[in-house]
Length: 393
Image: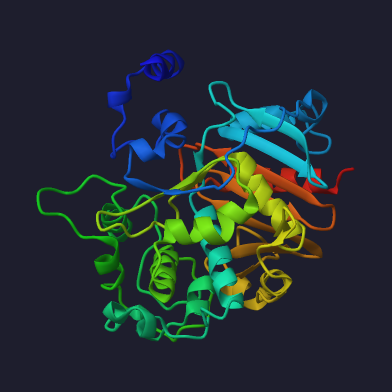
């Protein structure tokens, strides 16, 4: 009851006011994004080494700097205006700045939305290097239920690069395709009694769009949920256990992560992971360090080089996200900044970022509970801040 009392004092409404119809909107999202397992059934991605967090890296001087050169708004003010919940910055593996919104416990897990795609891709990359997963394999060969869907002749690499020809509308506030999708993953309330479509049946109902696979970059989240099912089929292991064994435990994560699952236990690998921001920072650092952490090679240098170097700028420029990064690329569910920068990042709606700059050994994590799924001005402001901070010494 102590937590409930604290919650009511901070937010001015009782826990029972939050439900599946409103949990992704302010003010409810401020609490819900840090307590997703209370909203949607979830599985644990277990760590082997639960640990206390490092001392808080207070850096009021950095937070008081101008967010934009010559501007009057400070970094702290930009984070507040962006409805950020937590902000961490490390350089050369050392935590140099940590900020949390009032009411946020630094040990809280936070829903990272589509950063989940990037975590899933890392798991896929490890399996590829182990010879268990061939990314050129058609999805239909691995998931027979998909034989009559768009995925039948799409390859695993098409899933990873968002180059599947798929008749689906990625409009987050839509009452059509996306609402049905969210009901299937148990993120939205059902329409009524008997509305019990699960994730796999939903995915296998999706049809091919005009044109072949592999041509354009078309960011569609169902691709990454299908990827999670593919990983379970090739290993015979539940994704939460697989990710824990291959990634979370070798990383030395400080706490368990969580992933939402549908009524049949299918994992929401496109957007359902919640974890501590500090563990997301460690994941970024692992990639900066060539795929190693705690003296262990977790992700191969080959995979990192492929992710960093083999995205196609022309495909990106013609694709559905070209305005997000003007000179960007996309490969293996990670974004590359491009334009002369070697920085890469994972990102999710409502303001989630893991930004990695190998040239300056900088990692930045920002988790948020923005009211709108996408606000271009806020995204661009934060991306500009990350690039500025990465270049500063």
